Amino acid sequence: MKSKYRHLFFDLDHTLWDFEKNANETLHTLYERHDFARYSTFAVEQFISVYSDINHALWRMYQNNKITQKQLRETRFVRTLTKLGVAEADIPTNISDEFTDLLPLKSAVFPYTHEVLDYLKPKYHLHLVTNGFNDVQALKLDSSNLTHYFQELITSEHSGHLKPDPRMFAHALERTGATAAESLMIGDNLECDVLGAHNAGIDQVYFNPDKRRHFNTITHEISCLSELKTFL
Image (cartoon, rainbow, N blue to C red; front, top):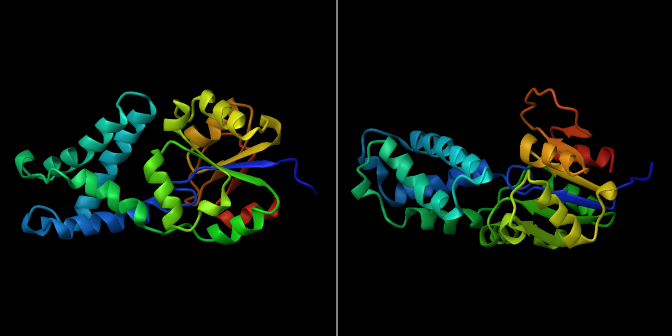
């Protein structure tokens, strides 16, 4: 059956680019670079766990327009390390910049990412819609050999709005010349990607590799990217 879709909009982090794996590798590097092992109060696993919790909380605040990009970047390591017992005066002043510089150079993607994009590219117009930052997202795409698949990289910085704001999706449609009826949004975040697209009149694919329970009505749900080939 011929698909009704012409434009596929992908989220990047946690959908194609394996954010957790790449972030963990980067945090390992920073832990060793700054010799945090000298603090007997926490091991690298605790450093990663505490950072992850704080970063997720700050990202939720950023997505709800409660803090700025600058505040997110400046706050996450200070909160992490002070919670782990490091005096604020002893926190490396450039650690947030180091993380931002190192992270997008990592290349891990989810299984079947390249195979599925190779399959989809000749059939559809592929685009990215992300709440990530312009400079960082572009580097991630280059590092993981994903740039050439996508016609448009649409970020919250470009649009002035964050998913799930319908204006972000309206901007994406306008930028690509697509209509909602011929578009499909593919992402891992139930609120930002799936419900955001639904509220904008766009069909959705919920990428749910951990098979989390929910009670939402969704156009399609997958646990592996390879499943996209069964209906596209």
